[in-house]
Image (spheres, rainbow, N blue to C red):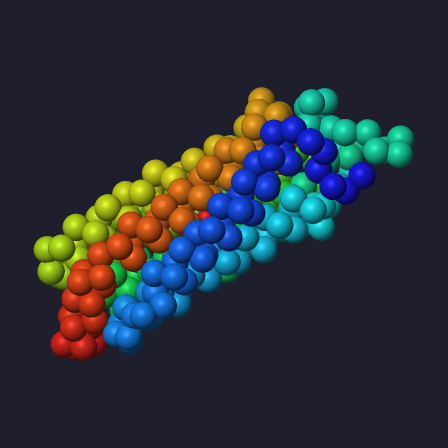
Length: 258
Ligand code: RET
């Protein structure tokens, strides 16, 4: 019962597992001979991102990262399954465990590139953890569809504040970096803005929102593609420019507290 059956859902979870594992191995191989401590910092952070996701995807593919909750009031019939005569909704909780750790790590990568100060980093990470935490509350809430969507709105509010901060404060701090660091920052920031904004839409239209406009298989595939792009795609773009990464270290060494 707990293992996802064959089909798009299961295939997506296995592609996610293998893709994240290959991404991890690729970053490890690429970073093996890196001796510069500033570059190493980026490798350490960026290697853990797909590594954590690979574990999370493996847990979902094998049925551990799944929980069935009683069908909340107001849910579309298409989002509901009947298991042992009970109406339930299948929720992949392991996604949130993954995101809770990996999204702050992605933001720390961006913040390091931008040469951000501690307060900026703390604000970004705080908003992010709040966003994932309230998203998890929404995913597990049994009090009815309306309550779940209120959780979604709270979480999306945190996302909007976070994206506003990325565009404002963090970009301003990145603007003080050299031209090529600034260009890499802008590229990764734009990728983040676009990809992150799609997550709440998939959630709302998929099973979690109870609307079930998008079936669970399609939703699982969509999250898998987004996760691979936001983690492995992001890491690939970041780590391929070693000279740029190194330049951020000399800028940081020369920077005074701001
Ligand atoms: C949730 C719940 C509903 C509201 C919002 C959400 C945002 C999720 C985001 C996730 C980003 C994940 C990434 C994973 C890395 O690969 C939790 C779906 C706003 C933005 C980038």
